Image 1 (cartoon, protein in one colour):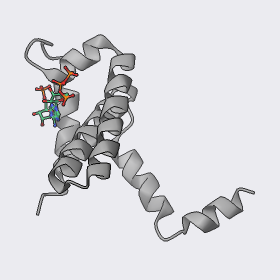
Image 2: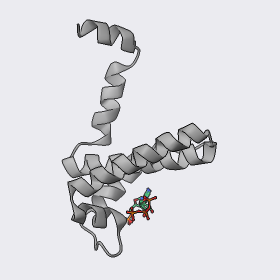
Image 3: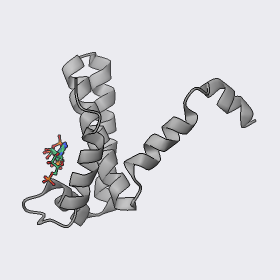
Image 4: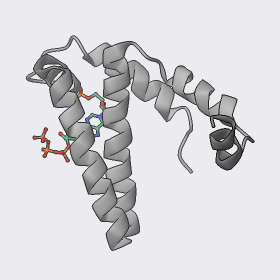
Length: 106
Ligand SMILES: N=c1c2ncn([C@@H]3O[C@H](COP(=O)(O)OP(=O)(O)OP(=O)(O)O)[C@@H](O)[C@H]3O)c2ncn1[C@@H]1O[C@H](COP(=O)(O)O)[C@@H](O)[C@H]1O
């Protein structure tokens, strides 16, 4: 079972690598290319996650979802939004049915 603190460690690693040498850091190279490059990768990885899910191959689903989550963390870091902000939003929604939430918006 993986350690749930990996998200916090990965967030710290991404923050630390943003200003590194792009020739030795993928995070730095992506940041150097700019937000559009980060968003393109999220789009690619989201598509690959969908394809993996359609194949039903467990290993591919895990691999592509990890790629997607990683690139979302790079995007959050770009905007200075923390993992805690996103986890806090999920926590805020905890226990409230999506059906009820949607009905309350009408
Ligand atoms: N978790 C990851 C991680 N997941 C995926 N990737 C990289 O994401 C890239 C894009 O994945 P693709 O499958 O699309 O590969 P690709 O087609 O070669 O990529 P492109 O040419 O399209 O950019 C690959 O180079 C992967 O190695 C990651 N790179 C880094 N990390 C973490 O980030 C930390 C800092 O990394 P560096 O900035 O490289 O030091 C690392 O210690 C890791 O913990």
